[in-house]
Length: 309
Length: 309
Image (tube, rainbow over all chains, first blue to last red):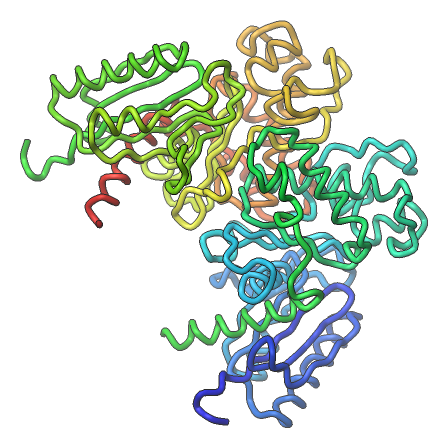
């Protein structure tokens, strides 16, 4: 390997449905990749380890690992459970140590954050969010989650953003089986109305099987637009990126764009909101790769941090 | 004046009801102060100018001015309308230049931000938010607004936080005259239910005249707690400070504290939220002086910025 070539980094996008693993020197040079179905922690983490060990044998050692994980996760480096998935509703995954096994086996720096913080970081570095700060990335899929960049840094605090559970006005449509949402914790939150499983339970069909004129879309777009309104009123972002499986229905993004403007109803006189919502609320620039490439960026970040020390 | 003494700064808290003006060398040494009723822009700004000119004649020149203003305001230094109050619902105050006249007359640096960003800055420097980052300050009064600190900086973006208009689930009580809120822009936003004037219109009495067991308080605390839930899920703050006239009703803060925990319903397993809400959601450390002292801090900041150049 020549001195100029950027170092090999391992990237793991740890999702509730699948783990995507790769080794790469940059977003345009992924040298190996594997998708693993998310089953139980033991089996899934074992499959990740096997892929990484194999990739190391084939392509040489990697200098760092980046992990973007579903959550909630513990991001406090001072905590005993740093690098754990904590109180997730995902069966069997509560209190799972993700970073520990990686550090023990590979002995390289590990950059760790939420899946959606990884995704917003990927989009900020190489995608639809370049130069946009504050920047929000939201995935609408198996769950709903969001990552946030403010002043060039991922937003952490007591914990990390948990945007999927934003409490919103109940949708106005009368067709749904229940006014209350499907979330086991809340009565009227985004994820409880607009995640893939919530749509399935509320309307009896998968999002991809619902025609574009189905009343479900009025409800889903209502709820997501109300959530976006709240994020705009709180973070004043320069761009919002909407990804995830539910957003693959192409009619959904324009519905959300127009409702955000309608719900704000002229309160914020900004052309981005009143006229140019199509460049303000956008699809990911990296397609479905935001999370994986974001994990790569987290790995690069962990390496830079080690170099500084 | 000795070389060690900190410089004299002028501070203006520009509110929808009153303008509080002071000249001070620090939070514990306010040498002059005047409260002016907010009438129309010409009259009010004239009264401010007269106070500042008088204070200058009496106490000597000030090195900078800090202004925290009701809004929305234009905070973009590159904008032609920087330092203006822009699309405010406050009658007569749309597109009012606040910073221009001050700069023209006094020829010193002017630090300018929203009233609530000033307040959160004041509380972060000297009040109940010392060392807490992210930090949120919310005032519940004539209007509802919030200021935010992230990574030691006031949160700006495309505009600035406009937290008062967060869209929340409609309150569950049946007693109110209308389910929809009082905001001229929105149907179910915090300010439209829980600001002083909204309470007056919804219940026919001032907040201070409603007994603590009046159903209005269930509604007001419902709405504010839902807003706080959304802020917690978005910004993951280390502390939230609630100020403003409506919060003077001492029974309101405990109601909100318990409802935030109830509405989150165990989703975030953090002791700050599940057990210690009384140190997580708190009253201002500076009482009603957060905004004024924050304006002082903004003035000090503007002076530091000038020194650096």
